[in-house]
Length: 160
View 1 (cartoon, one colour):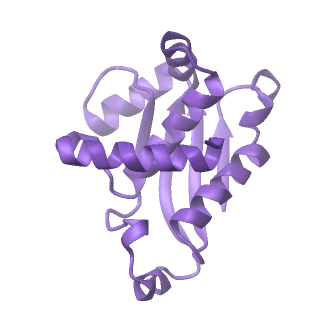
View 2 (cartoon, helix red, strand yellow; view 1 turned 30 degrees about the horizontal axis):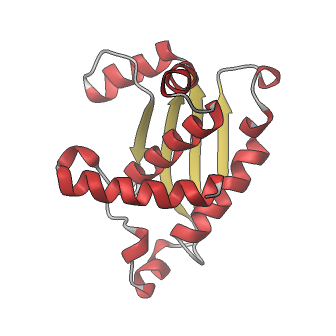
């Protein structure tokens, strides 16, 4: 299951940012990461002002950021779960919520020199990996592992 909400008029957003299009890409990532498990993910698209407030309230950091993740569980590493553990999730595995700043996404895409779509899905995958327990801030090994998983997931949702 996939839920998408946006602080922006849907007519002002690219077609690839529709709930249907995003949901299709989520299904690919979810099926790969959690085979035979029904997952739930919430995605919010907001502006710099709103994400700054969330960052300040939830993390004590008073600045806008590109993506925030709010996991519902910290015990998830999908590629390493034994089959019997997957059965213990119940009917739906709720992963949590990803919040992306559309303002920052567009700015970063322009600065880096790639499309807004590529940048959005980089942030989406980055947020997803944080939801399931990956954290590049724990050290170089964790950063390298997260980068490896990020590249793999991006190939799935964007194509090689």
